Amino acid sequence: MTTATAPAPAPPWARRAAHAIALCALPSGLWRIAMASGVYVGYSDRVLRDVFDIPGWGIAYVVGLSVLGELAALSPLLLVSDRWRPLGPRTLGTVAWITSGVLILVAVWQLVVAVTVESRTYMTSDTAQAVWGLTFAPLFAIPFLMTAVTWSYTKRHRTARRQGRTQSAGDPLPRVTG
Image (cartoon, rainbow, N blue to C red):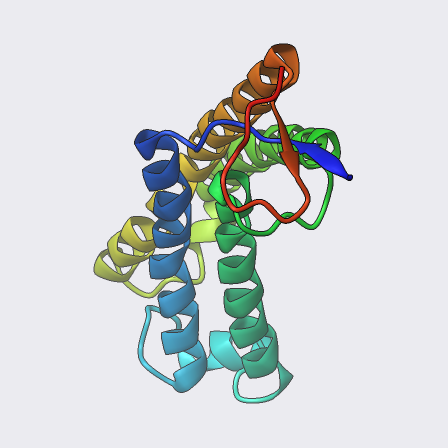
């Protein structure tokens, strides 16, 4: 009989935080898709053509970036799901902690880029800059939400290992053995 550690279910706040990560990535993805679709987002036609290669391969890049970003934002749902785990609990926890650290570093780096003069020169108006800021601002919540979800995941699995709870490989509910 194969046994696996059966952690307690994820608390509701962790589930909400994991879902919030996906929602935080949505506005910027929609903004990028609007840009690729030809909707005015604050860039002149020349900037779109010369800098972003839109129309052209830049459309595939921008849409692909939006899709990959949203898929990545959905991945924390694995930490609160009881149905499917592609990796073992320790490996998934390690990957999640590394991801949280990288996200914090990227957020700090993006904040520095956002306040530099270079990042503002392409926008044609202050309104466009404000809309851009509002669509990308929720991304700064992702590192903190990811860290909270990762902490919850690690805590639940550590507690399950300490308590020695095991579950048979096909059991739908955790079974306590003693």
